[in-house]
Length: 121
Image 1 (cartoon, rainbow, N blue to C red):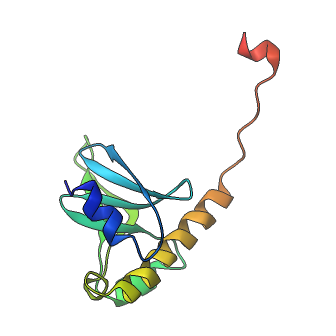
Image 2: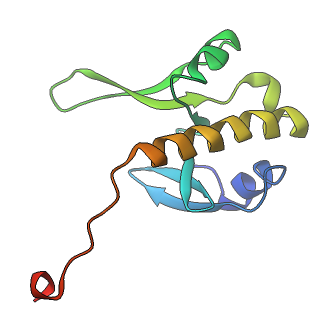
């Protein structure tokens, strides 16, 4: 697991982020949206169909884990390209792609139905 301070410093070119522990890794949040996953010391950025080709071209790979039934599960988070690790400008460009993907994913979600007073009781 990476130190929270390190993650916050890494994302500094983008702006302030929140870091939450989750399932042995960490989720990175920007403006309330999860934009990155940190697992096994590796940073994975949020992607979608629009950005995956760019990550592929940069030599990145998706975060994958093995489910209980032993089948691989491929997530929509791809490894931060090597070029962005030590270059704040390159990092910001890739992180902005993750923010845009997270915004698009959030826009596709159905809005939560507000509960009426009788449903709350």
